[in-house]
Image (cartoon, rainbow, N blue to C red; front, top):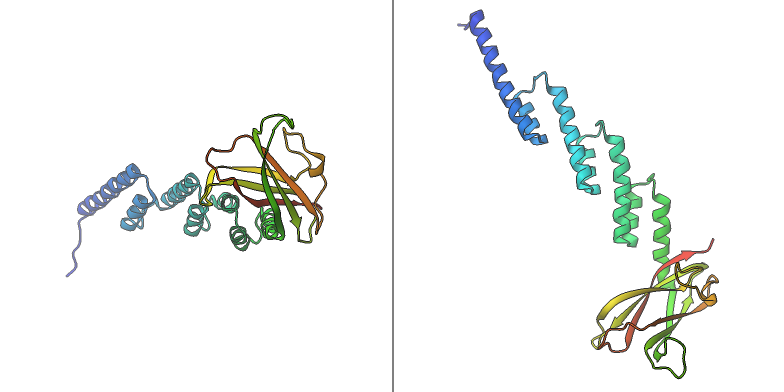
Length: 254
């Protein structure tokens, strides 16, 4: 036995369903999240609002990914919406953000990860160059480090009001270097870092606002040695007159 609805009943049923859909859509709009809209579509898959809602969901996810700002968030958006309206913008942002994250980490592995994931990335050559500089650091040797009290004004009769650090920087690699940067760390009696870390250069053509000693300007050739000299009058009290020097960056001469 088939149940036939009178036209009036059918009209009421349609109106009732339309009212339910309208209320559900209103609730989804009030929440305005991808989840609320997707819950609406799960309940009303044949809604004539389907295309509009899909666009809203995609836009919300794109905006959330850009606000988050991490490459992982942008990749999540791309995975969920591979053909979305904002894909090209997201791809460019993900590439740039991934490179920035690699730079912030500043390791050989981080740059390799960027290059592996972005074989045609905009920053590929820059990442490779920065990685090459990191790989070269072990080829620089710091030898014959000495520390002594000095007069900062170079007055032989003046008070010993500062410290001088000298070391030989030896280039044991096969590249000529136009910049060699070092970090200087003051150590306490336990050999632990005490106070601020200082940065200075053994090789550099210019030092910004500081006059560059002529001995620092020439590039450092393979098997060459450069004397590193650093002076300061601001050493924390109680230090053990011990220092740790580390080469932190190089720039190649081309």
